Length: 238
Image: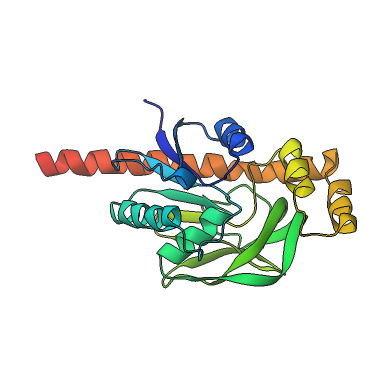
């Protein structure tokens, strides 16, 4: 069976950590596009796509954001499976008709989240789990027809809409990324940053690693979708 071919729509302005983390976690051939530079695929010939985190907000009026939204919307129309992470979660919600808004406070650090216990994406993951979070925007209202998958006291942390899956938290992070991202949050007080850094421990990271199974679950869904598409195409040609 050939490997999956997945478009990595990298929205991180400094994408080295993002690139490393997703290459490690996704069992697929990744074709990377630096979307902040306006770099987008010129076709939809992929088994799936991933939209990464970003320091941008989906409601900013920037040309690359508008172009990314248009490509993603068209790709979804083809039935392409998507996984959105953090900014990707928010962008997919926006494209599908949900509402994204700025939060009154910043969620950052290893946090407790709960999923609904009946989701393909979270299969094999404890209903109460730990994950690293860093965001000041949130999905305030789900897209019409979306299924809520995960929440915590800061709000929505995951949803599904057809072949689109999203999470607000960062299952791909390693400890190096968690520390670097936290160090860079100059908008937070030094005391808050240090408190988060103190929580980046081997124990917290080990707990958060259990959520990495969602990458396996997503790629399994993408593979099944590809096989189903091939069967339908074959039947149509008979």
